[in-house]
Length: 369
Image 1: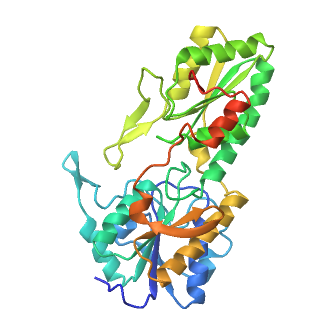
Image 2: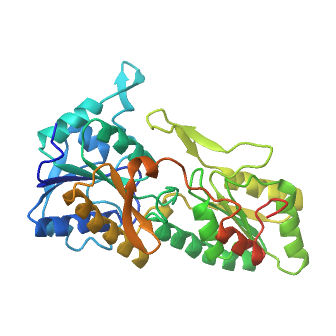
Image 3: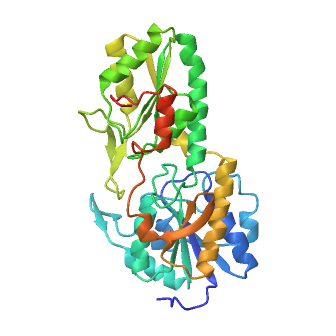
């Protein structure tokens, strides 16, 4: 096990969980200043899978040149690589085993003095366990869902809502031309930030969130009212985790190889079918899916990712381990990883964007909103 008093000379970096725009900007933000300080940077491939299976490459300045605007991650990623929830095929069955010791073995075998783990809630939970095993961990908050409470915003979120707003702009024209109700399903799992912010930016008429279970009649009333007022189309932005007041979330599939086996999806089709059947209005639905994760990061995310990366390497050199970089206002500071995962950031009735949307006529399918 590496001593926490040892001078930091070798840094590992990995991108855990799902990909999103801005990951390469963080890798660049870590690697460039690290080399300027004479440090060695080891890029661990495919997230925690690489840490468990011993897959890594040394990163040089040339490797991170020109990747600021590139989506995805040059290191690869995986949301099925939890060392403490490792799927292993035994005969015809999949068994879940603990390979935390293998991860620690490789960390020590690479002579790492610190590991920078870039990821969301799941990555930070894994990082806390690895930290308790003796690894010197620095976290960087990444998720398009924006559901980490300890940071004002995660990188990747701005890029995702840009995709949503662009899609809504395009749907407006076809909805208006054909006098249809258009339902668009967006990601976010149990948090409604993508639907709320993307829907607000894209001019949605109805936004359905996981945090505010909806009532069908309020949705029907809204689209009928718009139609009667001569607004012969409506746009509905629905989060994949949204559900009716008397119902459940729509589960697309279950995958035991994932730490959270629930795969959401399908609510847009349900909403579209119910609107059509109960109002007589022609309705179509679109699922954005992984379009929200892909492509180049927005300028905001490029800046935020770079700030996170440079701050994280500074944390490592100052030996601020067991902590995560966090945006507070317009500046980056740090919080403990334990604080970062203590609560999930969700939309609440106090959220300003919720009241802003209501003020301009958006319905959330509830009596009060």
